[in-house]
Image (cartoon, rainbow, N blue to C red):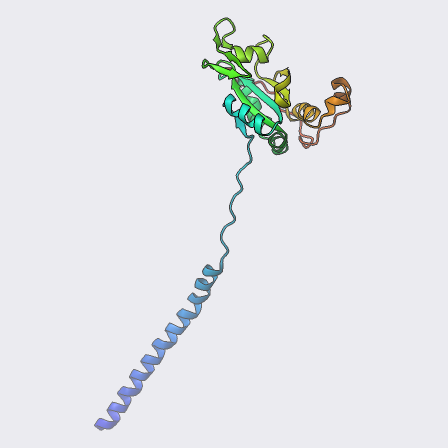
Length: 216
């Protein structure tokens, strides 16, 4: 084999090696490209909507300011830190989406720790902690001296006609109370007649869990 033939053979071998590498590179690129393109085109993950909660007010001064700006009915949840039924109502009743939406749309919702020891100024009066009742006198007045927890107090616009409703209440019961006041049914029908014909649409037919809360 002369030198020219050897060089030609060497050139052909190198060319074949080069073409083989180009082919392998093209195959790899062919498989990788769809993955890269697909990754770029993937839409962003949808944001998880946070569960709506009751817009609780804990500052009575804030409540009075809101009432001046935009009069609405008021729902006061009066509780204590040791009350097991209060906690159960928080977990089972106040988490119902329909109930939450209705309260936020139709009421100012105030949470009141009956045993708070600070001074409360409300409607030109001053309230403070009373050791005899082991409660703030504002709670004593709202509950009309009957210290039972939890108790829901409903008030009309401008804090008129407070009505305390003691005890734990499930979704069905709370819907009846809320709509009786919120839909102004109280103006033309008595509570006894309203409650007899009331049908819940918020509990989805689920029987309430009346298991007593753990002792505290």
